[in-house]
Length: 218
Ligand code: SF4
Image (cartoon, rainbow, N blue to C red; front, side, top):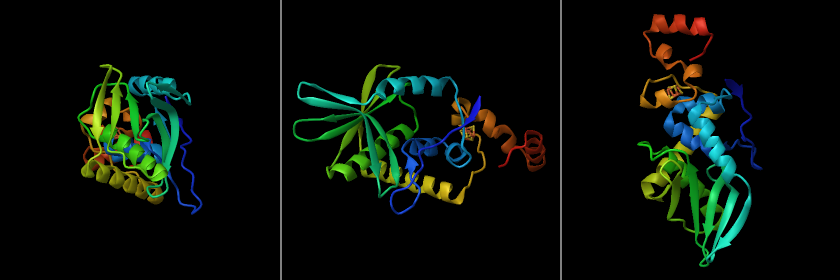
């Protein structure tokens, strides 16, 4: 079922909009998906998003605990004025030497796209700006395989996260929803029925008829 969501898009003192960290992930999965959520305000759950939300609810209880000298900070709010992003880290590990390591929970196994890694990297960029420390790596905990995967924050990954943040802001500021492009991600996308990629990718006359029938905009 579709619903309209209130995204945590607000502003710092300068009055410019900021976007949630999850928008980085959504944009790299599909720019149209990010725009449908953050420009049109549409969100629809499917089995993948429901399981993901349940997993995050467990990690979303703020607090901390210390084990063998490592403090685990749960649901830590983070933000970046430079990138105009805000959100939460599922876990940040703080070691006695002051080093910080973000850990993100994901329901599935590693995907072949870079979107999860870029979202984690964006968390690290926020932490670096907030605490003035270099953060060279983080981890993604894949619940399906119950394993932790190390992600190195390379120059290329940092650049990907920064470019995605800039692109998300452009979509929001221009209130633009890109055309659908049918791709492998569509089969698992919870917005498939809202997006109608089969119709949007059809020959022009058929696409126009489809949009009129379903009263959708491209
Ligand atoms: S159905 Fe495909 S084109 Fe449409 S938003 Fe999802 S991934 Fe993007």
